[in-house]
Image (tube, rainbow, N blue to C red; front, side):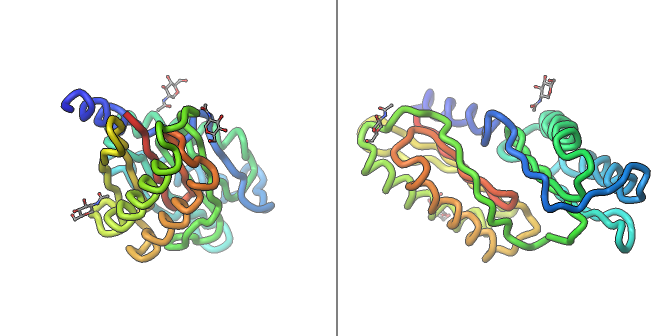
Length: 230
Ligand SMILES: *[C@@H]1O[C@H](CO)[C@@H](O)[C@H](O)[C@H]1NC(C)=O
Ligand SMILES: *[C@@H]1O[C@H](CO)[C@@H](O)[C@H](O)[C@H]1NC(C)=O
Ligand SMILES: *[C@@H]1O[C@H](CO)[C@@H](O)[C@H](O)[C@H]1NC(C)=O
C-alpha cells in the first residue's frame, strides 16, 4: 500500500496532460512587429513567468485600450517553482513560434497552461475540450471501471471547486487490485460554480474518448482532470 501511495505521489508531482504540446492560435487578429501589442505581450509573458511559479497560478493584463493584452498561466500538480518556470518558459517559446503574430493563443505544455488574448476572457469558461489517452491498456473490468472512475471524478470536481487553490488530488480503490489516482484543477479566475461546471463538462467527455483506459486526461484552457491506475 505504501508503495502504491508513493507511486501515486510521484506521478502527481508532474501530471502530464499532453505528451506533445496542444495549442490553438485564437481567432484571426494579428499584430505587426513593433506594434505596442507586441511590447505588451512580451511584458505580460515576463510578468506571468514571475507571478505564476510561487503559487502555480498567475493572471494579468498589460497595455491600454486597443493594445491591451490579457493572460493567465497555471501549473498543475505539486510542481516546484523551478519546474513550473521551466514549463512556462518552454510553453512561451513554443507558442510564440507556433502563433508568432496572433493576438491570442493558448498552449498546454506537459503540466502547464498559458493563454493570452486581446479580449478580456477572465472568469469565462473555455469550452474547447481536449482529451488524451495516457495509457492505452484497458482496466481489468473496463465497463465498471469507467463508471466508477467517472462518478469519482465528478465528486473530485465538486471538491476542487471549493478548494483554496481550486485543485485537489485523490485516490480510490477500484475492484481487487487497481488504485486510481486523480487530480482536478481550475484556473483561479473562475467562480466556484463555473469551476465545477468546467470540470463536469470535461469529465463527461471521458466515457466518449477514453472509456476503460487505465490513464487519461481531459482539459481545456479553464480546467483539467487526469487519472492514472496503479
Ligand atoms: C523545457 O525544455 C528543456 C530543453 O528542451 C528541457 O530540458 C526541459 O525538461 C523542459 N521542461 C519542461 C518542464 O518541459
Ligand atoms: C480495450 O477494450 C476495447 C473494447 O472493449 C477493445 O476493442 C480493445 O481491443 C481493448 N484494447 C486493449 C489494448 O486491450
Ligand atoms: C470530497 O471531499 C469530501 C469532504 O472533505 C471527502 O469526504 C471526499 O472523500 C472527497 N471526495 C473525493 C473524490 O476526493
